[in-house]
Amino acid sequence: MTTTIGTDLQLAKQLLDQDELVAIPTETVYGLAGNALRDAAVVKIFEAKNRPRFNPLIIHVPDVASIHQYAVMDALSEKLANHFMPGPFTLLLPKKEIVPDLVTAGSDKVAIRIPNHPLTKALLQSLNFPLAAPSANPFGYVSPTSARHVYEGLKGRIPYILDGGDCTVGVESTIAEVKEGAIIMHRHGGVSAEEIEQCTEIKITSGIKHSKPLTPGQLKSHYATTTPLYRGEVMQLLRQNPTKKTAIIAFQKTYPGIDPKDQYILSPSGNLEEAAQHLFAVMRKIDKEQYDLILTEIFPNEGLGRAINDRLERAQFVHK
Ligand code: TXA
Ligand code: MG
Image (cartoon, rainbow, N blue to C red):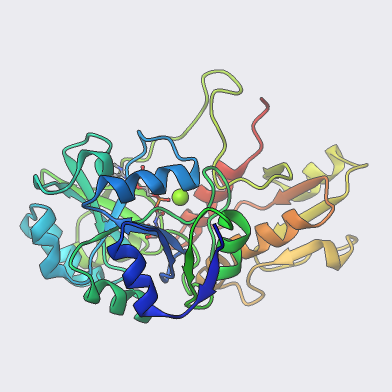
């Protein structure tokens, strides 16, 4: 199959109407989209990504009103939806019958999001079904934040990539769920915990389980570069690996005494949103060069720093 990149919304719609896949731009990362209501299309998503079928997919809709077609919303979820959607925010809600089990991996809950990108908004409005879309990368690799990234990972496996430029948020959506009046965070992402607390005046409960493998090798690393990545105190890690050709991912400042060309600064002005926007592109760029090792700092654990730390923690090299 030949993969083309373009901005033809008509063609994207035509392919999706025929149960084919199209990679779509969103403000977070590119998604690999198919008709969420058609098993024939959803199966192709799992296959193109090599993604295990027990990992459910987010469905993408054009507006808050459409959410009611697919899920049941309580008052607090509705408040969150009205405040953060469209945007880098996903709600986990009790699903309605119409959502296929294949999309939710058998769960009675469905994850729903309204992406905030002009091309994808127009596309969703033109369709009469929602789009199931995981990040458009082969399973386990770093998520794509440009059409070129999608092409590198999925060429030959999908017919079309809708090119909407570079993603402006750069990390995936925040996933939250309302349960008995509390807000559970399932994934840190483009909307910070602080913003949600400010909107609702409710303290957030983390539903995030820290993935400590029981035995080494049990956990497959995610968002992972091919070059081994470690995080922590960079100078100390460098001393432990004196002979390795090493790239450093740092937040704001370069380390003295190390060649600046091996140091990738995500935001010289110290802005976590800017850092998040550049994170995945930098990981991919380093991965293409001839480094033995990637070392990265622990970012400030606030705002988008939490999403950055989460992705880097999961990207860490796990001995097989
Ligand atoms: O920003 C995003 O959310 C991007 C763009 C393309 O929308 N999508 C994305 O999808 O990151 P994906 O599949 O790479 O990550 C979705 C996460 C997975 O960890 C999945 O397990 C979880 O959401 N998820 C989806 N549906 C769920 C459900 N019904 N119950 C629990 N978790 C769910
Ligand atoms: Mg993903």
